[in-house]
Figure 1 (cartoon, helix red, strand yellow):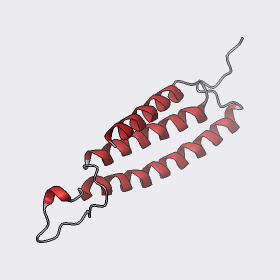
Figure 2 (figure 1 turned 90 degrees about the horizontal axis):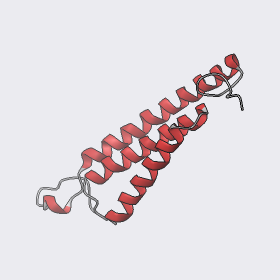
Figure 3 (figure 1 turned 45 degrees about the horizontal axis):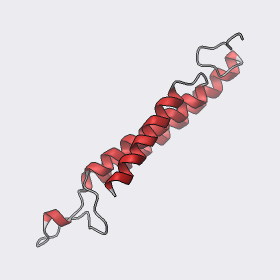
Figure 4 (figure 1 turned 90 degrees about the vertical axis):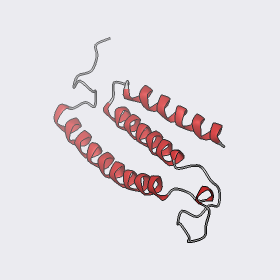
Length: 112
């Protein structure tokens, strides 16, 4: 399970960095989103990966058998903030494309 999560984080980070280095603004935004998903998955994995474990502490429960609720709440908050930030980036992208006439990162198309 840990290898699968580590590979998923690695693929998301690699794809996000590759897309952030692209010349189009939309690709940069998608790369930033993939990086935020990778960080969310990393934070979630740091809360101990446990299957069918309750995230709430009971009076007589063993703490080693429970999931940590703090990373879960941090990731949930990060998802909401990331969605709002992505929506704002897309609105700025559309306004920039309307003003400049291109969605190239530096504002002009490269000459071949």
